[in-house]
Image (cartoon, rainbow, N blue to C red; front, side, top):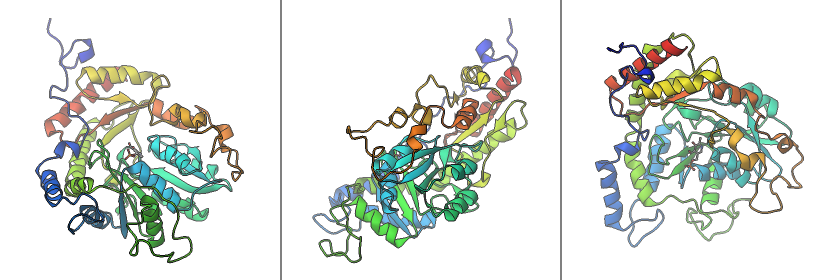
Length: 430
Ligand SMILES: Cc1ncc(COP(=O)(O)O)c(C=O)c1O
């Protein structure tokens, strides 16, 4: 019996997408000759540490910092080991510590929140809205006399509502740290993400847009914050003009850690930075091509974009009108050969949604004293409200959301097939 062209693959019809699926490693899949050449230079020179070696050479890490700052339009860049260390350094540099609350959205990789606890402060979890980023209304409601800073996350590649978030932080005199781990190369109203707050933090871990397997960076226009970032990230003080000199100003010296980036990482990142704009424009083109072909489908509401032009377009997210429709929709899409996933399901663990952050909800700490929750400097009561449902709007939105990666390596044919798959499934099931 002949199958109809529009019969769902899950019911035995032909697949909409017949080309191989491409994993989501935009920069990772492009690692090649440029990275090899940069690495060879480091190996040939035996210059693996940014500050010194058997012979003097210009540091690859320093060159990366200068080029990254220039690309982002920031005054200073400090390369570090990863984004978690960038976030912790940013919090410390901003003076966050015992007794302080830091507001972060409940849809983000857990590290954005864990970094607050590592900096000895108390996380306060904020709702997202249909942009999948921080809800500015809830942000304002969550501010207390203890609030010192905000970490806003440009989640899944797209900008937060920076006009409102910056205005709220200014009004309440709060430090603003941007978590740009998933949105390197994105912008808001023409200005690079990471340059709106006091510090912008980036990740170069493997699935990120550009990558060295691991790596991170902080950018800031504030010279004092830059000094404090350097002071924290390198307790050996190699960064100081006179390493063993006395304090140049009150508060310059304090105990830090070692989050220094290696020259091997710096070399790979230099090559990857040269690919950033091409990767982002490819993803934007693919996403536009798919979106154009599925706009107006009944039962599908696209994620709201605070600035569509600034979206890095790493993914397509849309909401269905009812959470119960997500699993059948995603199963049918997968049968069509289209890689898709639901975003939130209480039964399926995922470190990107606060409801699964047991360490926070149960206030788990590495020692029995329970710091920072038991800290005598802390006068607030936010942790008493921690629960799996403390941000119900976030759960409601994410439970209705479908997510598709948009690899930069997709072809135009792949995009047409993905759009066809979504159309087929939406028309049959919604
Ligand atoms: C939003 C967000 N913030 C922070 C991080 C932590 O980055 P890293 O693994 O470089 O420490 C990640 C990593 O996935 C992330 O997605």
